Image (cartoon, rainbow, N blue to C red; front, side, top):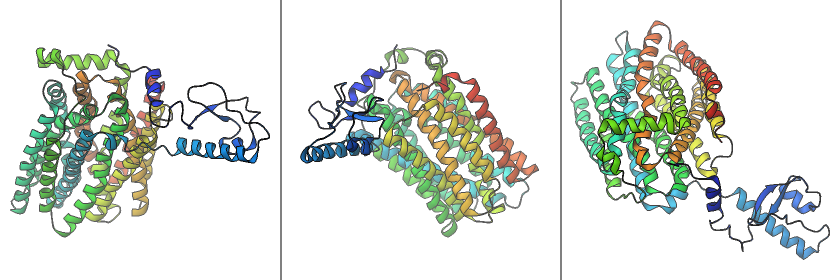
Length: 497
């Protein structure tokens, strides 16, 4: 089964867009080395190495050396329009503007991700407050964050199988409604003052179980609400719901903790899950394709089919999934250490901790905005490898930061690099995967997050023996070493165009 669209077909669609017709004034730029006949006007706009050519012709629109003033003015106008059309074609919100169902999906994902980040911040600070007098506070705080990903190891792949057999939209709605009720009950438990740190652990496991199933399905639904040629733009725009809520959720959560306490954080989390259900209620999936074979096969056979496709059908997807272990399992514990780093190194409180966690969203937001606006302008494989290395270097430098402003800047740069990797690799995987396997492949892509608990426990134990500064520096050093080894081992990733 051919799952990748020929490059010529994709390029052909580009000229079918408005402003690219044969009778239009717009032109595209093409490199040309024999540009000696170009006049000074054209050189001033495009440089000596570029000339303007018609979309459907191979000839160069070479202007005469000596033209009249009127002809020169017309040519100047055409060249200006050409350059502005080429440079200012920002496609960031094309999917949101053109597809109604994708707008509902985007709104629902925004609410769900905002609730997730709000929970991550609130539980971390809650456990820290409940265990501040113990000698193992760092281990308990990091473990609370890592527990959220444990269910991915056991439920994630099976959630992908269910997503390929039953209605993805209805399954997500059911689980989000359950989480709305659970978050509200936990909010009242916090208010009752009978809360213990292990209650937070139970709540995190329940929330992580639902998240393990809904996350890959919400990503798979992107390709069910837009046509195939818009998948890359839609997936990059969907990343805004992760990075944008990472800015908004923790910032508001930190302010609420510092002013009103923990109850309202979990109450707002419940309201956000309800918002996801309401948005999905009106959404439809016009670009989904049923998989009758998957329904007839057993659950185990369906899971094996997805694993076989990743390992043998599209080997580059397997390489990208393995590469994702570095940012998702090795580097990600840094976020769980921010409460400890904020108090012990930066000497701040929950408000500064919320700002730091929000900054991780700002960097990822800028990365997703860049890719959604202009698409891919360079080799995607090298972008993935370079992004992981850059993120590791930022973490190493962060460990030595002592001023909040410097820490905020470094956290933003780190998240920009990680956001670049996740947006690039995720859009490539979604584009290459057929819809009948999309739920299973996406769940396998998220599987790397399940190993986060192992690294979180390890780094938490290590920090209790040393310091948070040494722990963060060690994380960055290990990530940089693995990034270098991966660049040497994964030839298919390096060659990914």
